[in-house]
Length: 305
Image (tube, rainbow, N blue to C red; front, top):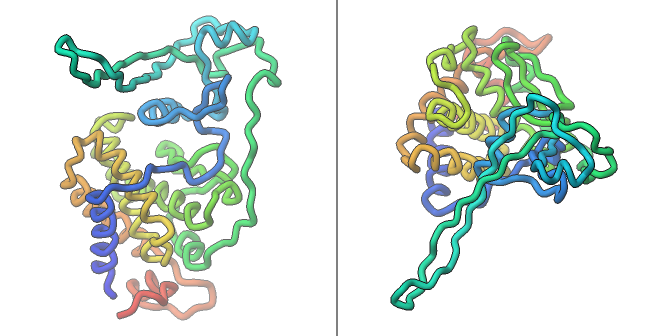
């Protein structure tokens, strides 16, 4: 099987799931960094989740002004609130007696716990950490370790992210992931982002409006997840990750009016990113030098010619 066939296969799997409906995307690790209400402990969802997550707070708690007061705290001077949107469909009776559904939209202002003082820690919900015996997957480990100009990778963080200014990937501990394969999928996602650094493909430098919520940001997220899906296919773990990837992509497609042409466009950029990583694979210590292509693919014995 050639590389191109793998890219096409994974793209087709994703498009197939997009067309048939996909399972809701879920955070694949148990992390305290998921934005949550500081009274109920429930995580935010939809737009609120992505919006609050984009501020990259270490602690997850957000509170309304009234909740802060009820817990005995106060807002620090100069703190700015964050918008949280809530909506649902209400059944209403029209003048002619028929029923209709009317959307009800509300919004709230919340403050992050770092903007609050005076609340005893015991008044906040407790987070139970997930921990399991992580079993490294050899092909995945080798792909990452042999990337010669890989960014720095730091573990033990509350969320997965790539920081272009530091050329650094931050990851939760592998032990906090519910499934081992999902750890690698998340890591691959951030590593694909890093290929856009100016020292590599300079993709991010060509996105002047790369801010959370706009089209450039959405497109880059599609590229990163498509690239991660390809790397999952290359390392043989795509069956454990494909549904989550498709659901994640569907979420970003909604921001782009569900136009599936963006999947094809993102696939092109994603393939370039993957090709870059494969092209910069070093030869294992003690092994004989091979051609560039052979060196990139030597560990992937499941890629049949």
